Amino acid sequence: MGKTADLTAVQKAIIDTLKREGKTQKEISERIGCSQSAVSRHLSGKSVGRKKCGKKRCTTRRGDRTLRKIVEKDRFQTLGDLRKQWTESGVETSRATVHRRVLLNQKQRQKRLTWATEKQHWTVAQWSKVLFSDESKFCMSFGNQGARVWRKTGEKEMPKCLKSSVKYPQSVMVWGAMSAAGVGPLCFIKGRVNAASYQEILEHFMLPSAEKLYGDEDFVFQHDLAPAHSAKTTGKWFTDHGITVLNWPANSPDLNPIENLWDIVKRKLRDARPNTLDELKAAIEASWASITPQQCHRLIASMPRRIEAVISAKGFPKRTQLIIPPNMY
Image 1 (cartoon, rainbow, N blue to C red):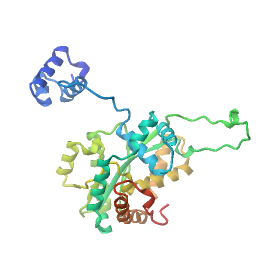
Image 2: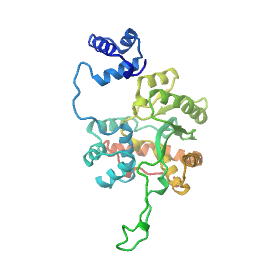
Image 3: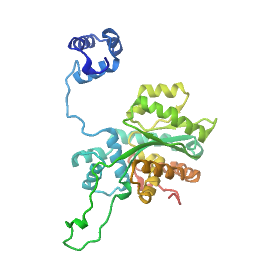
Image 4: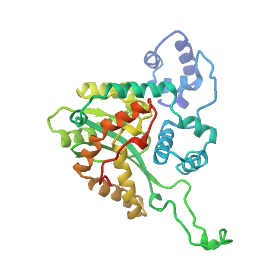
């Protein structure tokens, strides 16, 4: 008996009563003999003690991160272009939603500015102690995007001038880490990432990355504020392992040098043109393995310039000011 659907009407009524009495979910689960997650799911569906208000959020946080990365590629795109690319990535939404998601709110900008000011005097040596991490999505059709056709006026709708495409192409989600010394092993993620699965990634891929890149030396770990990353159990995992986590401002892919590495890998995939998921994974691994420590060090050395760019832009992302090291690609 673990799922909400397995709870009897009596059990559900008892849960509601105990919740109104101020009992915790753990106490309720022990009282009626079911899992704590079943209690949580029932209460989330019922919203006991308060009424739900407002419209349901139409995009996920992962979808929002995808949009931010689309924007980072070209600051001068129209809302229509952004919406089209976001739709192609699997997120169906309106132009108004795109506009709301793109702009940083004032609180986020202030936090970015405060964070950058605090890190303004960090040296490259200090940034070299940071192990940066991130997840990125790779689509099967990545290498075939933007295909052009040679045609005459009036031939736009001819079958020979049309090419079928997959609306939701097969894809893989990848986790990786890098430092000034190079890159760590990649993790191909299956399914959605929750706190438990993320801690498995940390155990089996982050720790080996740290061992490879730092040996016995101390390091600071960086990740963004995704729900699985900021979960209490994940925080406890870092405490138990004695690992310091770098505080990180929300909505700041422009500050993470690993984003440049994802771009390198995706550029190389255009030439590889994989046809199966296995070929896609192999191409990603080969491209990742070809990244040199020199490339990584140049990216880490750009951190002071990234910080200055945020300060000069008063918290706004300003990628045009970020000087990408020469020979980066």
